Image (cartoon, rainbow, N blue to C red; front, side, top):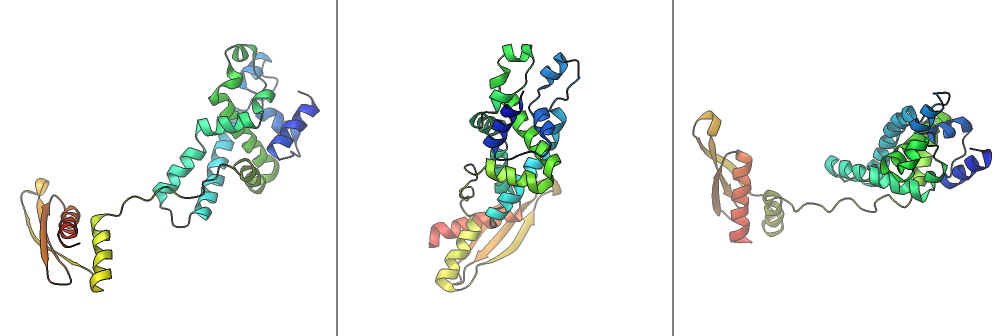
Length: 229
């Protein structure tokens, strides 16, 4: 690969390497290195590093963008952004498949268009940028690469549970919260049942029995919502 090709790839990704040999390594598949008797370094170690750096960059950005999102929501958003299909598609749009150095066997087997190969290549480039310019350089690269991929909103919030919905209703109508009391528990330790009594601010009482106090409270709240609101 000549300097012009390397320059083209750097222009596409919006990052210029101080050490161009790192980019060349990031583009070198193990099949190519094997065919050259290991005289050139492949991108497997860079891919390992880039995978970790990318997760941190994406985690930090999502953490900043969605201050009210829960851990599970952030994890789901990150998983989608760093998934193999997403990264492979981004690599194709950047034209990285054109610059890949593949062995003849891998080339003939369609490796230039394989998601796994393209995903690894992109992660390798991020790892190379980290070695070239530290975390700040890699972070800036990820920001540019993901400009059109960052979600504009967190996942659709799940419907609130019965206790939360009932509390909102009672606060609105009575300016007070409902009261939950455990009034009974029975059965052997491995199969206990619990009965909870729910009292609304107007004195109306509902009760429910379940295998845990939390479940009984939810059932009592559901009954109150269905009957009173």
